[in-house]
Image (cartoon, rainbow, N blue to C red; front, top):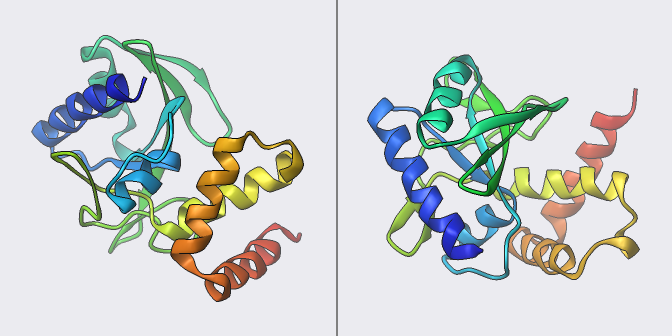
Length: 177
């Protein structure tokens, strides 16, 4: 499945480049791109796109043979060539794209990851960790599949204990009404 994902990712990036549409890879693929190696099999592609250009992004998905399947509370799910795309908007703040409710700097302007010959914009380490903190609220860690334990350990190792604790405190404050 990873080969199929990488081929589709290449197609998505070429189509986005033709439109000058920035895309960021998130989740497990962001971890892999930041490390420069594939660490596990993947089930989907998490993508962040400019929210004000959603129609253009959806058109691109359609041109690649895909379709939007479901609206979510944070964006939408699409399918292209048998691959699930989990898509979330980022919004221009006047100086950068940011994901609502995520730590600042979630969408770095420069490509900070690489998989094979693909240079990739990726969600920041902090944004990936933030997603795991949400996941921790939804599913007890004891029920996580092994792949998520593995990936979360890679994120914690990349950030270090102090940064993870700062994120956890910020996340708790963000979630407290």
